Length: 405
Image (tube, rainbow, N blue to C red; front, side, top):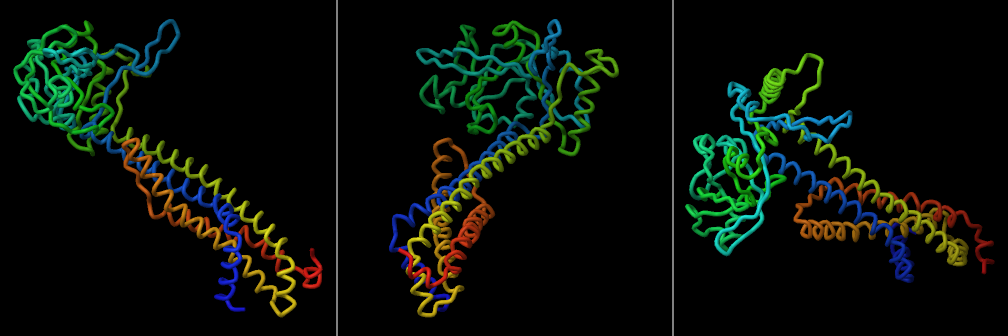
C-alpha cells in the first residue's frame, strides 16, 4: 500500500470516530493556543514597558532618596528625605549634563466653577519641559521666574481640562482654578500624548516647585531629581558626576554608602526587559506542559484504537499487508490529529491574544518563531507519542489478531 493510500485509510478511520478524534485533538489545541497566546502577550508587555520607559524622557537619569534607618530598622527605597533644592544646585550643567529638574508631587481636588476633578500635581522647574519632552498646545510652560517668585500658576494636561470644562479644547488660559482651595492661574495646556510613561502628562497639573512646597505640601524636600544627559554615550559620565557632586554635598565619607540612588534609564530598561522576557519564557513553558499532556492523550487514545481494531489489523495482515503498512497507517493517524489540532490551536492563539490585548489595551506581538515552534512541536508530539501504538499494531501476529474478540 502506497503512502497516499495510507493517508486515505487513516482519514477514514478518524472520520469514523469524529467525537473521539475531536476530544483527542483538544489537548493539542489548548496547548498550542496557550503557547502562542502567552508568548504573544508577553512580547506585547515587553514592547509596552520598553515604550513607557523610553517615553519617560530622553537619556534620563533619576535621582531618588535612599533608605531611611530608624533605630536599626530600614525603611523602603526612597523613604529617606535626603534630597533638597540645594542638591539640585550642586548638579552642574556641562558637557555630559543637559538639564536638571527637581520633582515633588502630591494630589488634590481641582475646582473651576461647577466643575471639579481629582488630579496629580507635579511641582518642578522649567527644565522639566526639556527632560520630559513636554510640548505646549496653548499658552506657555512655567519659567524660572515663576519658580523664583513662587507664582501661583499651573499648566494643565488636556484630560484635566476636559474633566473641568467638558472639552479638552475649551479656552481655559487665564482662568483661575483652585487646588485644595489654593487659587492658581492656568497659563498653559500640554499637548495630548497618551500614556507614554508610568504617569501620563495628560492627567497632570504642573506648577512651580516652590509654590507646591509652600502652599500644598509644606516640606522643602524633593521626591526626586531628573537629569537629562547630553547623549546616550555620556550617560555613565553624567551618572559619575552626579554621584560625586551629591556625595560631596552630603559629606559622605569614603567607604560609606550613598543616601541617594541614581538610576540609569538604560539600566532600568534592560532590567525590565529581562524580567518580562523571563516571565514570557515561564508562561510559554507552563503552556507547553499542556502540549505534553495532549501528546499523552493521543497515545492513550491510539492504544485504545489499536485494541478496538485488532481484528481489522489481523484481516489486513492476512490478505498481505506488511508490518510497515500497519505502522504507517497508525502513525499517520496520530500525526494528522496533532497537525489538525496544531492548526486550530494557532488560530485560537491568535484570537485569544487579540482579545486579551483589546481587553487590557495591550499591543500583543506574536512572532513567526513561536508559531513555527508550537506547530512543529505539536507535529513532533504526534510522531513521538504515535510510534508506540503504531509499533504495537504492526507487531501483532495475524492469527492472534483474527482470534481476538
